[in-house]
Image 1 (cartoon, rainbow, N blue to C red):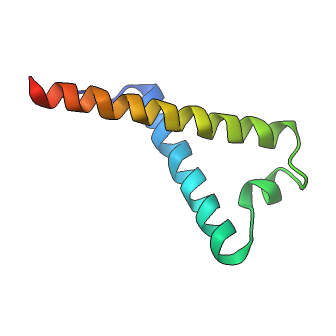
Image 2 (image 1 turned 60 degrees about the horizontal axis):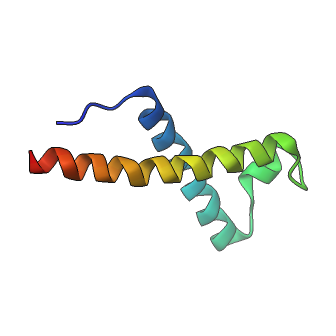
Image 3 (image 1 turned 180 degrees about the vertical axis):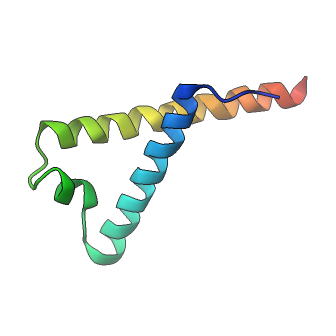
Length: 72
């Protein structure tokens, strides 16, 4: 079985933050990242969005790793 490393754990956290943020944008037109880091999104807010995007890519790679470990 594949063991989670620190990057995978952080990616899960950022994916959850991103999913909640998108859900709130869709339901209430409320951007939590924009509220926390000021609107319009400044440099720190953009870094958060970039980290969420990188986390999404890491989770795709994680799925491939998990698939490979199940075959073994």
